[in-house]
Image (cartoon, rainbow, N blue to C red; front, side, top):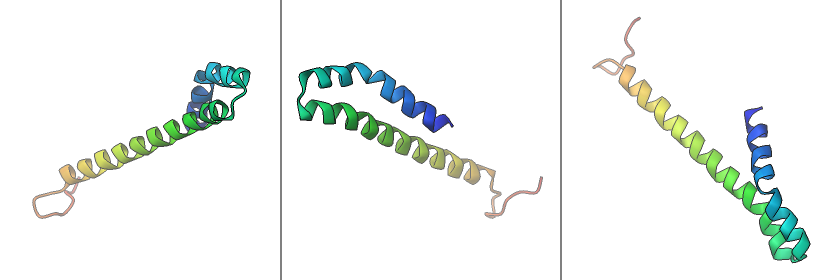
Length: 73
């Protein structure tokens, strides 16, 4: 659900450039107004996932004991 909300926010924020692209009636402007938000969302989501993986692995390393085993809790 959060991803869908982020996609809608990306599309809404670029609505003015989409309207300008339609008004200019050039294919390059229309394609860039539609494709660029998708590309930026994909890059941002990829970075987000990679940072989450990094923090999860770092937390697991910190929770391990000296012998590489997880401590008993």
